[in-house]
Image (cartoon, rainbow, N blue to C red; front, top):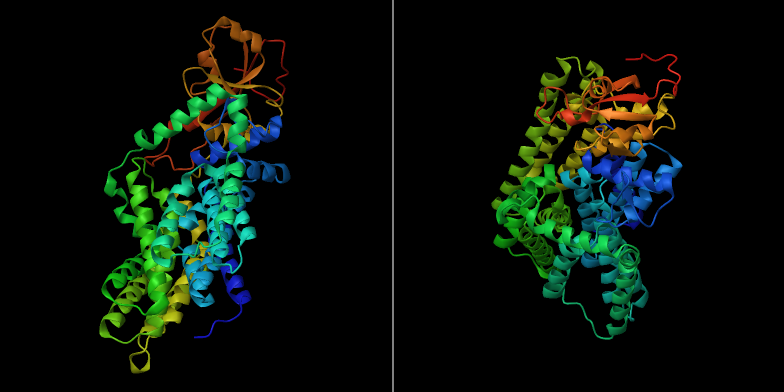
Length: 554
């Protein structure tokens, strides 16, 4: 199969990435992780302090600042827009898919395999979820993918490749400024092990460029930390100890916790398992065998290193999806070029049949879950039913062509289209199952004239959830209501679990109840509905300090 020019492939990657990361990206409100990140960015904008990040008025030096700077820039342009903030992560995820394409094209000399790997990556469950949330992980791994690509270009260059090595060092620094050494450990180190073991790059004459890479990476990575160690030496030492201990004491899981890693590929999970099994059971010719071995070792090293760290979360598996996408792409193209053999045909058909059955069953599930309860318009359901039924028929038909041939490219395209249809048509309905219809966000306080210009406080001893801080776009500082000197801070807005009239009864204060807010995006009967996100808001002042026109005095 001849490779075409790169432009159609890049267009396909951009198109699929648009559906994967951008379309319907504001269905779910910001979760705790996103709220922490965005609250920090909002405070940067309010205070103008970009070098020393704070979160709700407290120093937040645990996380390097680059993604927060990006979020702050977006906040300047489109204030309070969660969809725009998530588009920042979506751009990073798209960039990661493009760098994966460039890397695979360089290693395999095949744009077709490279496009396949990039499209698989952009339709895997983990990357899709990470590209739709304001997560700093997607930034650090995206920059590291760029660093890896430039590193390979530098080593494969006929001359010294100094420029490529310089770019690689800069991108390593950007990765470090996004989330510290995370991507160095989870993405770069496994790649280097596999690259050295299997592809064995020629390092002759590369000493100076590599030195330039290292110096550039060190300077671009550590300048911000160096500044903070000078400005806040005690705090930085405390943060370093806290972060290192978190790796071994927080969210600890057993060594084998990541055994279910194929599930992070979503619809490609079975093909991923098959690609690994086929590598160990079937011989592949020439250079492609080497690339296959390289991607398998990269995968295994990444899994091993992540498993050695006691702290484990499924979202940490994002780097594993990079070699995983290469595994699956090589398997599909090997089968496409050499479909002979009962075992090959049986395995591929078994995988495709499972996907076809899932696609065929999806309209039934949607009808039972959404249409019967009136949560989805009948017309939209009809479109979904036609699309997925047609895709299921196309897949099954492609499995049984004349002379036992299999339309592998047709099956692949159908799976990719099914994910695009899911993101465009089904996500709003799926979100409605979980979204709290009675959600009454404290974000409404941003435009409430009664609270304008007043400081916000919460009861000391009862920590405030960061979702509230982000949604209110204001500091919510602790206040000891048992200390009589708190009246010196009047007037203020009190955010409390109990009504302010109960907490401050008999104090001779004027209390204007604003509203009761429920910031839970989970429904009230859901086990994750959190009472800490339900809070009362009231203006507390001395009797003569506030005009209460239009408000109810308690």
